[in-house]
Each structure stands twice: as structure tokens, then as C-alpha cells.
Amino acid sequence: MAALHFHNVTLGYDRHPAVHHLNGEVARGALVAVIGPNGAGKSTLLRGIVGILKPLDGSIHLGGLDARDIAYLPQSAEIDRSFPISVFDFVGTGLWRDAGLFGGIGKAARDKILRAIASVGLNGFENRPIGTLSGGQMQRVLFARVLLQDASLIVLDEPFNAIDSKTTADLLALVKHWHGEGRTVLAALHDMEMVRNHFSETLVLARGPVAWGATAEVLTPENLMVAMRMCEAFDDTAAACAADDISSRAA
Amino acid sequence: MVYDALIGPFTEFEFMRRALAAVIALSLAGAPIGVFLMLRRMSLVGDAMAHAILPGAAVGFLLSGLNLFAMTAGGLIAGFAVAILAGVVARSTGLKEDASLATFYLASLALGVTIVSIKGTNIDLLHVLFGNILAMDDQTLLVVAFNATVTLLVLAVIYRPLVIESVDPLFLRTVSRAGGPAHLAFLALVVINLVNGFQALGTLLAVGLMILPAGIARFWSRDLTAMICIAVVAAAVSGYAGLVLSFQTRVPSGPAIILVATVLYVVSVLFGRVGGIVRQLFPGRHLEA
Image (cartoon, rainbow over all chains, first blue to last red; front, side, top):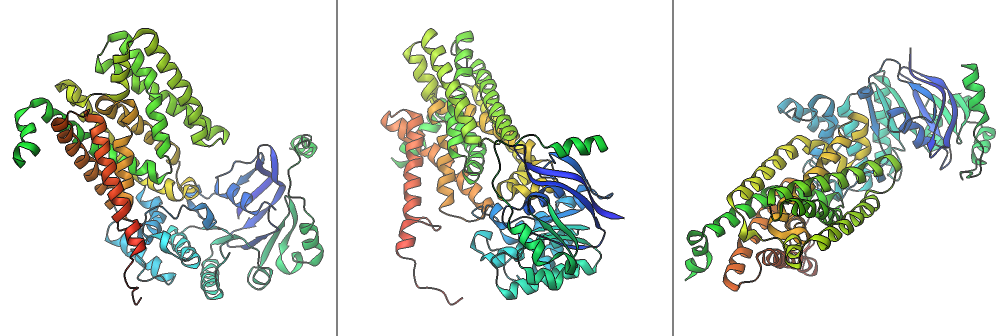
């Protein structure tokens, strides 16, 4: 059974599509890289999957998963690191599904949080405010929170940006561990070598799907060239999309 | 001598005891709200909301004269209306909340001044703008205490989503729908506390006992819980010292309280442990690790 099913999905902002007419399925347990140039719609697609952004058209089905079975790692630029919160408390927010508004954080939960922090190599950082961490350390903290969420679908938005090779290797090992456990993982990435070597499936985006399938078949110079030629700018004079009419008639 | 100056006014005069009880209630509830306003970069939003409650208070005044219940009810209605309209417009259009609020509060302020100037006198306007904590009766004190209690209870309910929404709003939206309601409830608490402060400090200074203690706390701690505690203590100390200053020098009580808080703020800017100027100029020898 598919973990994700895209049916003619269009996602965007103010009626302008950032991802146009995406169809396809992500199998349960798949490890999928989403690649494309800046502005290709990678983050938009991931936001659509986790429910932050509603599709302008079409639909995304979660294959029987509850929305809370999804763990999302946002780009670190989205986080206000000046807020006075410790590593422990920040990682602990990953227990929202269990704790909710009022649930206590007992000894078992505290141990879980400490184990998650230790798993990403941040022993001793528990009481540090997140504002004092380096970029790589913050990324490890975000991975610790995903770990704690214990979700069957994991969505990572550019998880290896601007971090050193050691941190990248450690966190990539964690991603592969999750894949090994049968979890479905989608990651927006820029590093083609990493995608080629570690991700079995790839979706090439350029404001619409360019190619989607086995990485070895999809990651060709031709497909990458098509993606690179993508026009980033929205066209304010664009007419309503005719393809939507065709698809709605077909449906 | 010291007893006469610092404690005597409160043992001798009932109105001073009521005023002290009121500033402590205001501090307990308003200071934590101020900390969140500051951390959510909404300090000026609080100031704008303080102006937004004016027309409601003015309508209450027109209907019932200087009846604080009527003015409080009017202020709450006007404040909620502006907060909710601004919040709904911001969330449904993508317009930044400060821009949305600026539009509504300016309209509200213009309406309030118009209403007061048509029907009231300059003295009425001064009372609305600057309040008078020394004229607080038992019933008003009970309203202030009730509002403070409600604030603390609601803040306890929305504390978690409020913290997560402040630091990582996208994450909260993936795990819960509590972010929107928590934000609106928070705006409601801002209004309640402004109306509370409005009795004591007037519409112009009501936000002072929320924001200044929060600013003070920022210079002494990097921990949220500690910041809230420091802000509450700073607000209560400012309230107490401001009342004493007002009693001894006949300076109006509201401005006296805010001026004391300002002095504490300046001291914090200079000597604060976290980012204080002196600490930056003389950081001490660096550590080994």
C-alpha cells in the first residue's frame, strides 16, 4: 500500500502554482529524494504533504496514516532561535502526540528525550539555549526531535544544508536507519552525489514533475538540464490553467 | 523614619493598600503576558492594543459616566473586536499582523477620541488616558484580581502551544491545530490585561507594566521560566516603589510606577548578566571550555 498518493496536485501561493499537476505514489518504506533548483517547489511540496499548505487543486492522500504519524523537519531558517528555550525542552516538543496540552513529562518521557539527544551526539547540551548552538548542532537537535516523534512518514526539508561532512555523515546514517526500520522518508536535497549514492528513488521537480523513478534512471543530464531551465518567476498575466479543466472533466 | 517612608503609607491608608494589592495583581498577570509579547516581537502590538480599547471605554463612559465596570466592559469589547479582526485578517490574507493591527487600532483610537471629545471634558479624557490607581475602590480591585486570575489560568492552558508557536510555528502546525486558537486566546489576554492596567495606569501607560518588566527580564536570564519570574518581581517592585514615590512626592501614581520601571530597565541595560553594556565592555577572562 502507498504511504502517499498524489492525484493531480497543484500547490502554490496566491493562485500561482509552485508545484503543478503532480501525480504518483510513494510506496511504504520508500526512501525518496526530492531534487530541483531553488524555487522548484521542493519545500512547497513537502509543506503540502505535512498539511501546512492546502493544494490549490487535486489532492494528497496519506494512505491511511493519521496526520500525526508524520514527522517534519523544517528548514532551520524557519525557527526563531532567539527564543529562550533549552535543547531539552525543544527536543521534548517531539512528544506532543503523547503529551498534548497538559500531559506530564514523567521519568520515562525524560529518559526518552535524553536518549534522543544522546543519539544525535549532543550529550551535555541538554540545558543549552538553542540560540547558542552552531548550525550543525541545531540540525542535530532537529533530528533528535524527529527521532522522538517516532513517525512512520518522515519529511525532511533540506536537512544537510550548511553542515560539515562529519555531521552530514552522522545524520545520513540516521536517515538510513529510519529507512531500515521500514519508515517512509522523503527529503528535499541539493547534493546530487548523496542522492545518487544513498537514495533509491528520486523525484526531479521544476515547478512541476520533470521525472520520477529509480534514481539511476531519473538522475540523467537531460532531466537535470530541463530542471535547470525552469523559470522561477510567477507570471502575473497568466491565464487560468486549462489543464485543470481537462483533469476535472476526466475525473 | 524608614518605616514611615516605605511602610507607613500602606499601614495608615486603605487606598494605598488597595493600590498595592492592585499593582501586585497587575504584575502577576501582566508581566508574563509582556514576556510573551516581547519574545513574539509584538511589543508594539501591545502598545497599539492599548489605544484600541479607548473607544469602548469612551462609550462606557458616555453611557454610565465614570463607572469603571461600564468602561471596563466597553474596553474589553473594543479590544477584543480589534484583536480578533486584526488576527483574522492577518491569518486569512497573509498580511503581517502588525500591519493589520495598525489599521484597526488607528481607526479605533480616532473613534475613541472623537467620542470623548464630543461628550466629555478634558478631565475625563485625562482620566481615561492616565488612569488613577489611588482612586480604586473594592469592587474595581476585585475586577482587577479576577482578570489576573483568569489570565493566569488561560495562560496555563495555552502555555505549550504558545511556546512552540513562538519558536517553531511550522512544527506546531504539523502536530496540532492549537496554534491559531492559542494565538487568539493570547491576544484576548493582552486585551484583558490592558483593560486591567487601564484602571490603574490609563490607556497610554497600561502597556508599560507589561513590556518594561519583560525588557528588564531579558537582560538577566536566557531561560523562559526565569524570565517570567524576574518580570513579575520587577513589575511588583516598580509598582510598590512607584506608589511610595507618588505618595511622598505627589507625582501622579501611574507615571511614577512607569518611571521606576524605566530606572530598573536602564540599570538592567547597563549591568544585566545577559547582554548588558558593562558585561560586554568587561567580559572577564575567557573560559577553558
